[in-house]
Length: 111
Picture (cartoon, one colour):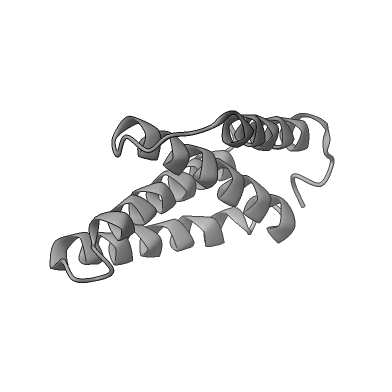
């Protein structure tokens, strides 16, 4: 696996941690979740910037934000007991399909 995909995976995972911490922060009224959110987003943006050395911003952002949506929805469902209806699940399936299509068939994925 190319190193830039590892960078992108780290960026997606830490972004997901950041948004989960944002939920836990209670609109920044709890210190440690707020600190975790800031650190996680800092790490995420750092690895996102490393990815941008190898891939165009449009592709990187599509993958980063799309997978982040799916990951945080799964955390919301599994951990926070938030419900997902058919439309939400179908939409996330389309996001995953889009990420797969970009990575398998697009010649835009690397500079």
